[in-house]
Amino acid sequence: MNSARKGSCNKSSGRNPRRLVFEGRRLLWLSPGVLLLYGFPALAQPQQSPSVQGAATQEQLRDQQLAGTISGTVVDGTGAIVAGAIVKLSREDQSLSQDVASDGDGHFSFAGIAPGPFQLTITSAGFATQRSSGTLHSGENLLVPPITLVIATAATEVQVSLTPAEVAEAEIKDEEKQRVLGVIPNFYVTYNSAAAPLKPKQKFELAWKATVDPINFGLTGAIAGIEQAANSYSGYGQGAQGYAKRYGASYADSAIGTFIGSAILPSLLKQDPRYFYKGTGSRRSRFLYAITQTVVCKGDNGHRQVNYSALLGSLAAGGISNLYYPKADRDVTLTFETALIGIGASAATNLLQEFLLRKLTRKAPTYASAQP
Image 1 (cartoon, helix red, strand yellow):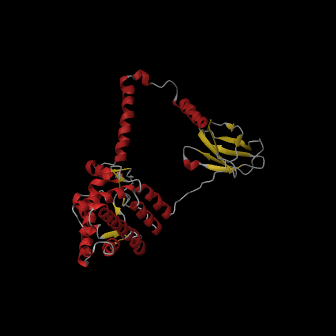
Image 2 (cartoon, rainbow, N blue to C red):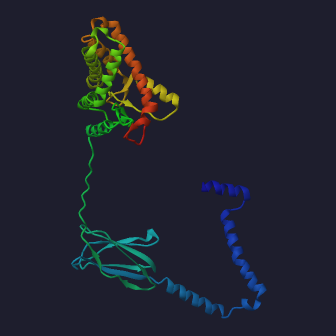
Image 3 (cartoon, rainbow, N blue to C red):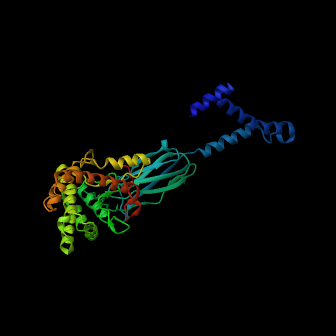
């Protein structure tokens, strides 16, 4: 940038910038001289001969530039001498820095040092670094006070790093606190785009927590009541016995689907059963992301892949349900229809996760980035 500016100045003025500065300074100094010579002739007359004045000036300059010495002694806290300590002399001009080692008597010395401020830095094995500063006057032989070194405090730095499994366990604990409106479990969503992959044990732990959550029992009871009121699965009959069968079937659907689709198959296929919240980008991109996560998931290796766990889990759960549903409701076609309905429900849930549930979920953790 400087070169560019210089170039622009040269082109615009055609004159050397340094020459301009020199001439400017010359004019500033010349103006008072002109005033003295022409405006005040009496004041411009020298009071003493040039030879006498020049000699005095040269003598003053020699006095100001007269070099000196800096010396001292390095000792420890008991007053014992410290030999071999490195003493570094630093000046405002770092190029003038120099260092010496204290001799057998703990003594050090710097000779031929120009006047001005200085700093001494003293280091020695086993001792803490010490610093001393001062100002050397013209021709002065400065003896600094004894520099006392103190024993360095032993410091041990311990770096504690968690294993990926421990990081995942901590994230699960956060997810198990996520509840919509503080009540409904919202365990299968992570707001950390870089969440650590779950171990098989952790996938089963999360499935178990979701299955035995008290709210799950209450929701299952509500579903069974709605089915009985509509006389769904009429083979179960009515009354308390019919309600118990509907309740058991509904709870079995939930438990089997959760364990197969979110624990067993994800463990075998090494896939993550959680929804990775996006939270950034346009509404369209977030909408498409939520929809595709129904059939696409994140593998334990961090790569995107087909969500075989959810797809096969829905089919497996539907097939197993034929074992306890009334004969009239057992049908292979119904199994595939149920699986498709499950995929649609999953897509709807993902949309809610992306655009609504995050706002309604209490104790939802915040991470540095929400971009998957």
